[in-house]
Image (cartoon, rainbow, N blue to C red):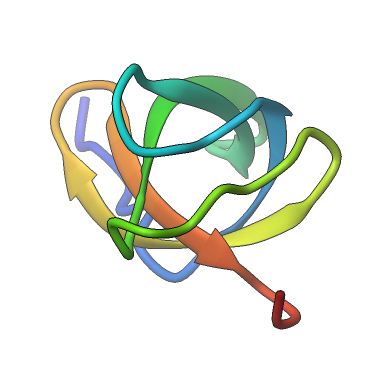
Length: 72
């Protein structure tokens, strides 16, 4: 199966994303929605549950780097 790129897609934070332990986001991809471990794209960011975030990087298989999609 070819892996679809998640970079550039919007996600919703389901577990607080902050420096340190991984948070979690859900991304609509491949005709469904999948959960990914998430780290902030900027080391200082803290992104709360429910925030819409953009995926800026992908570390296969299930880790992404995100930033708030609509500012802080």
